[in-house]
Length: 270
Image (cartoon, rainbow, N blue to C red; front, side, top):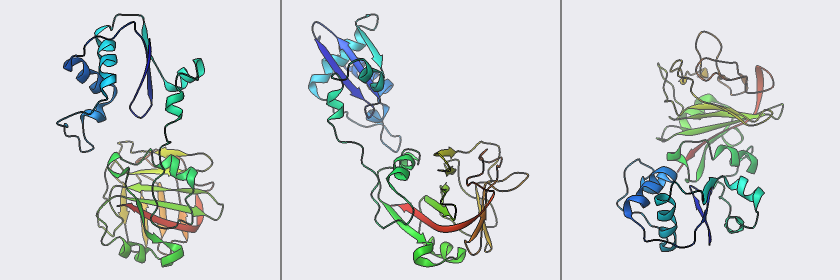
């Protein structure tokens, strides 16, 4: 008898060859989910759930897998590997709907499906699954850093900045805090820079310093440490620059260190 069990959003495919199923035990079931699908046990906020919902048919399969750990009749492989071996085995996964893209509550002058597919998997879990709301756009609000700050006034959640320059390069930053004028650097290790120039790449906090973001009336700075900034924008949101910095250990986000902004948007998650 052959069973295929998919866990953790189809990232793991467990192929089990058994002649019969034996009754399940709670401790085996719990161990299985803690190891292979912890999000089933823990909520998004990190607290333990009081219950776990499991299809009855899967209980015996999981128990057999755990209790017969020394057996050579089962193995753990990735979905991709199993599809290469036997495409028909994983056909049930193919019939399931694909993961939906984030819902944009407003039109974007920059973002397309390719951008969304990449970004949605790298923003922090606490922002995933929420619709994206456009809080600032140069196309709608004009090219002014002061206006950007003003639009952030009532935002109390993380924001995503998206920039398209005159070379048609797309890049930007995720910030754990809304952009604001401050006499000190703010943000957390969730903050990162990213670029689609020429392929998608993300630059997370290196741990070298905490120069995440600092806002002035005449400029916005992200990343630093003994030299130029990872991302710098002027007061008119027209000129910008990007250099390697200690905070994110990034490469320049655009084709050139200095760039001219064509469009700029700031999104939040509601």
